Image (cartoon, rainbow, N blue to C red; front, side):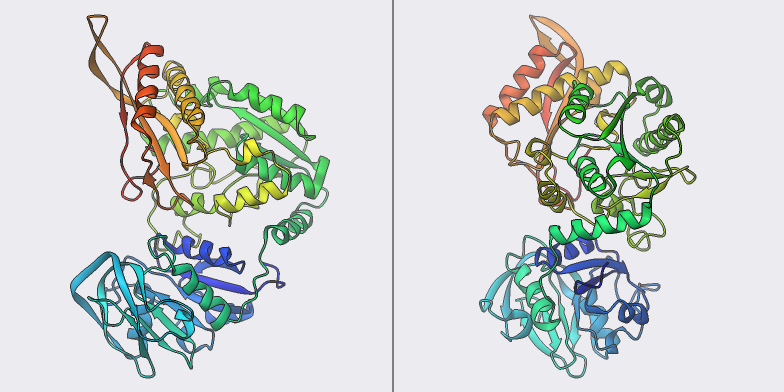
Amino acid sequence: MPQSHDLVVVLDFGAQYSMLIARRVREANVYCEVLPHDIPVEELKKRNVKGVIVSGGPASVYEEGAPKPDPKLWTCGIPILGICYGLQLMAKDLGGEVKQGKKREYGKADLFIDDETSIFAGLDHTMLSWMSHGDTVVKLPPGFKQLAHTDNTKFASIGDPEKKLFGVQFHPEVVHTPKGIEILKNFVYIICQCKPTWTTANFIEEQVKLIREKVGKDRVLLALSGGVDSTTVAALVNKAIGDQLTCMFIDQGFMRKNEGVKINDLFTRRFKVNFISIDASERFFGQLKGVVDPEKKRKIIGENFIRTFEEETKKLGKIPYLAQGTLYPDVIESAVPGTTTGKVAKKIKTHHNVGGLPEKMGFKLIEPLRLLFKDEVRRLGTDLGVPEDIISRQPFPGPGLAIRIIGEVTPERVKILQEVDDIVVGEIKTAGFYKKVWQSFAVLLPIRTVGVMGDKRTYLNTIAIRAVTSTDAMTADWARLPYDLLEKISNRVVNEIPEVNRVVYDISSKPPSTIEWE
């Protein structure tokens, strides 16, 4: 990260929300990174860190092997905000006492502010907060005072303003704490004295410079899917190195209906880039024959993407670099060993372009969006001139429809889902809900059910419809689509797709479910 921006870091203790904290800080136009929980203080000072946020986590401070920071952290002089586990860790390490609470506190709670200065400056005396804890601070460390409380938690926020050490038991980063962003702004602006200089314009300028320095006169191959992520990478890398970039679209056979034709048209007519399209569907279907395990699917698809790129690249001459549209949530959920999140976070699923990549491959990776969330990428793409119809596209998984087909992936099953998906997306767009939800799609289930059509018994496929609302894909809620819309989708699917006789609607949130079914 260039030294032209103030830097706040989140120390990751395994919380699913660690990256969300960073995103909220960036929303305040202050640059933020997530780093390993045990990073040495010397490294923080070397990077001129202006503030540290210690994340929550699943551990208890008294558990054997509970993650700990560098012992010098609390006395290093850098302003610190501890969240949940971070507050408890701070309190215990500095001479306070933490015990398992008599009453656990999960969900919404009224927060009563006892000190309306520093991190609560400008906020109302009472505010809504989101709690998620079993342990609680029962004795303050020397020099600390109570800043806020709830009915169940006396020390819901504590602080030592002189040493610029603060802690909150609740989660200010989640939307369920409506004024939480104001608390984070107070920390980065008032306590850390950071300036709001982090913008997409600055990001573009810096990434162009970094890409040019890394690539030099070499060529870059871009794994292009036609979605917002890879298209934005294409625009960014093209801005940096121009004709040194070649965009390659590999049709694995799992794309949406007529997707390959649309992508070909887009990049040959609307973008002035070197563009190659490869039909590798036969290869991918062959590799997935008989495979039903979702992790195996992802790894097979990830490896075959790379192998196909390697083979096709040999026909193009020497191209040492591969550019990808990898985003922060991909990295988080894959929990790759050796990465920040891989140390203490648990793997949720392997993304084909992260954990799904083979250990040995003939490319060096360029992933300029690796530290960005989807909403940041959309803003970046707009600034780079990416067309609105691409910017507004809902996320589509790299493995395509293969992970929306539960069970074996065959050409016949893909064809069914392509037709269903076309109806689902089309009706949601017509009803004006496409931009109102985060994702909306169909899933082909591995079960058949009995139905009756034209007075005859049928035994056909079942389709699940999934639509969720979200801001970052880290958490999501099922979308309350109108019954009339769901009815229209169901009627069209059953009437127009002869292989289907039942449609169900998924009303699960994330967590505990993920957005995609596999």
